[in-house]
Length: 98
Image (tube, rainbow, N blue to C red; front, side, top):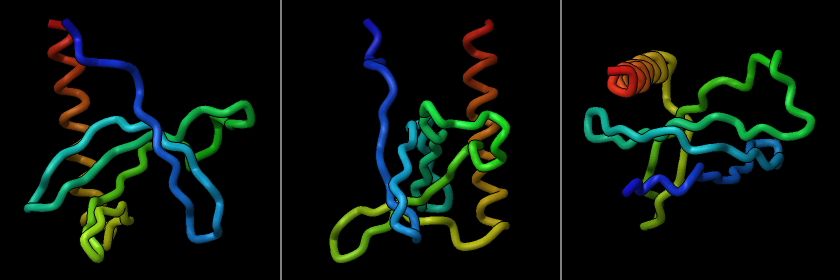
């Protein structure tokens, strides 16, 4: 029996106060830090040509005992974690095709 109940969505608020709906893709831990990958949720006014509609990677941080999502600290951290997510996603695809 599959435990997959469908996509999980979250809404975050950017620095300008705009709400952004994201679809959870995967999570991983690297160097003791938890990272989560999301795709922007498709909406009626979504533009498939928009370059900002790619993978969104956030990290889990704890502030005042509360878990929150935060942007990554550097391009190097982003590139490293992005590569790890891509490896995991392509590995899952290969497993499905075998």
